[in-house]
Length: 187
Length: 289
Ligand code: SF4
Ligand code: SF4
Image (cartoon, rainbow over the protein chains, first blue to last red):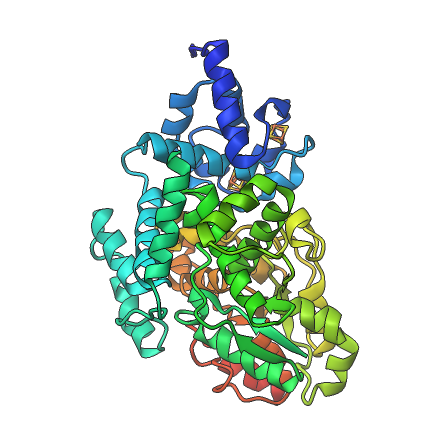
């Protein structure tokens, strides 16, 4: 397969953006593959974690953001512990997702980013997570309206889930906090 | 000893029994838990996957609240919350610019005075297993337990500073102290699929399925955990995993606080042992008889 390698400038800019968010340098990676060997989700990824770092080094930003890899990384941090170059790859994976979300590049069919958005919407509203709301909204957004419905009766019976959200006294505080973060980051 | 208590969202919902059993056990051990008034969600995985600053500011807000209580330690039983609190604290301490941004967002200074601990650390290190042993009223005679630590309690070691990241021992030592048999096995710190429970459930079936299988093969009668996400993936999803593997697994998944509570003489109902999907009561009755 042929890959188009990006210009020096694109590569540099991308590496800098990653470093700014994660504090990590992708240039340190020497492609040993240890991260991929230990990654529990590698079996389901279209590219291995070490291939993704290579794409990043080569500035192949679009390809990397369209991969399933960065969206189904479970943030388990196994790679971070084992990298012989001391790279916290899990943090770099975070940075890829953050940048992709910022650019509006979320591949169709990826459910994890939908989950993130709905989760944050819930805490923005109540200050704490309302699971019932999260589940129903996620099921609708991902086109699986009946997913896990069969678990509902037993969870209600065991008092593990509630219809009414638990709110903090001043949920507006969380909303303001999120707004301020957005403001600072847009600068 | 008095510490601030950060239950986190899961302990007020799907993991109520973890909350209840922690409260009971610490009371018995003479540690006063004082819930942080007005605590908010730590942001969990979605926050740090969306904005680095948000992922740090949310935990810091809670740490400031704990500081304002005048307490020097906060405990967080949820391994995911524990991890976020630890990572945020470390990052803010190492990165002055980030600290400034966090303080701008929160409108308050961040002192970094509050120490973050997982309840297991309080039990194993501060109180000490020697003292726990003396308080045991009924031994978990020979109960064969696979101790499962998962990811976020132990990784990354630079931030969490909890036990060994590849072969931790705290849970195992606690189990042994209570009279159980802590089995050697290789999946102590493998990932269960964590926050993919609702979004990428197939990944959870795969990863949690491997963990359950491995525990069975090691000869376990139950699994002990220290995280509500692990508990829910291994317990709530176990039926579906059994179907997928066409195999009966039937392994109860208990919180360490529940096992400890039992050994300290508390009953199953108050420890929330009736709330699990895989019923542990028969096994435990047999063990305690
Ligand atoms: S383990 Fe580290 S050095 Fe090796 S391929 Fe992965 S990121 Fe690169
Ligand atoms: S953090 Fe992501 S990339 Fe790293 S080992 Fe875990 S799932 Fe794989």
